[in-house]
Every structure is written in structure tokens, then in C-alpha cells.
Length: 193
Image (cartoon, rainbow, N blue to C red):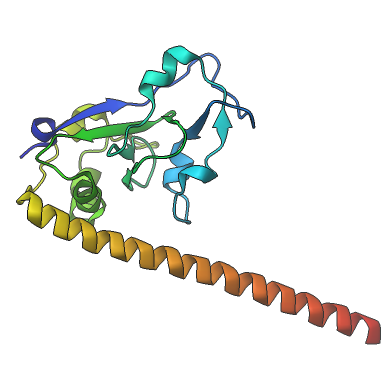
């Protein structure tokens, strides 16, 4: 099936004149491309706050929305599972809202597969800055097994993501420990030198 048959796709708001600025007292969290392509796992509570006019709140993410960059070199999809606060997609992002026949967690797995990424790379436009347009994304072929099978795949992928997050945190702790020990050695060696 093509994506347009099983999901709605929209683009995030782009503020041409004055983009909302970070504000520690802002009413919403802002999600941008840089957050999706970062090397660490994305957590909504790490997103910066922005002050946003009430008229834009209808564009905030809903649980189950799948977000994917529309520009750049990397097209990693992410699912918004919900949050204690509103999250506003900002800038060059596509938001995919799957229909009931498509599990959003499965869709994230499917979009992030190497084979699908290869297909999407053939759909990119532009020479220096690549773009995955909404129009192109809507034509993407998606394999849609039964919902039971989709959920099984999604659970396996979720387990893999949790393992990767734990490994990332362990690597962070290892770096902090090495930095601390290195600093101790430096301080003790400085007195004798």
C-alpha cells in the first residue's frame, strides 16, 4: 500500500518572519530536526520550551504521531508516545498520523529500516540540501501485515531501542568515570612535577 492510503501526512509549521524563541517559562516544548538526528535517544522532557501563541496549539503532536525530517542527510523516524506537556513540531519536519490499520510503532520501525531508507533516498529532491517532500513521502510503498504481526515487530523494535538507550547511558557513565579518574591523576601528578 502507499502511505497516502493508510496515513495522513502534514508538514510542521515554518515561521518565516519570527520563529519562536526559547523561553524557560514557555507553554510548549519544541521539536526540531536537530533533536531527531542527535546521537542520543530523544526524550521529550529534554526539548527546549518556547512561548507559542494559542492559535498554533492545534498543531501540537498527538500520541501516535510519527515525525520524520523533511530536509538533510538523515531521515530517522520517531514516534511521539505522549507527554505531560504539549510538544510542537517546528521547521523542516513531516508529521505522519497513521490510520487504524497501521500501528505507529511499526511504522517507525518500517521507516527506519535500511531498505526503506534506501527507497526514500531515491525520492529526495535537491542537489546540495536534500529534501524528502510531503508529496514524495505520500507515494512511499509500505508493507502492511496484520495488526498482530505489526505489534509483534513493534515490540521487538521497542526492546531494541531500550537496549540501545541503556547502552548509550552506560557509555555516558563510562566517559564521566574516565574523565573523573583522569582529572584525579592530573591533580596528583601536578604536585610532584
